[in-house]
Picture (cartoon, rainbow, N blue to C red):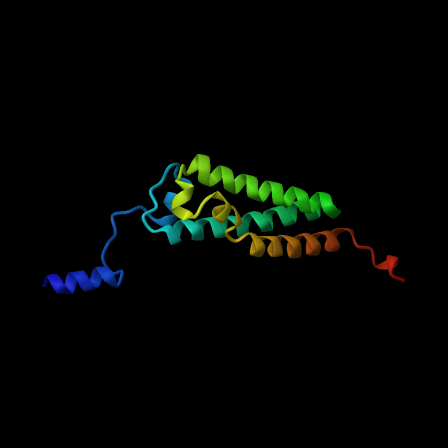
Length: 131
């Protein structure tokens, strides 16, 4: 009987006493026994932040290097605040602050650029300019 329950726990069928990942992600100073779950949370926060900033920059309309620099500063700054102050994790457990800061950055940047370009073009590009 104990062998069956142990195999069920390994396969993920046993009820966990930990709060869900979503609850831990929005709760301050949560415990992250599985390091990959926390890295996944950082990755997805970055993706959502990239899309939100892309829409914002497209609507404002922000152009050029200023838009790129602001994205980098806001994206890195908010995530650094999230894992260092809000979650109060030990960065060394994850390979240092730099590893956490760059987690998912490139895909977030790509999503940001695509969203920014589409929104800006849709709102401000005039067809008569090319004729």
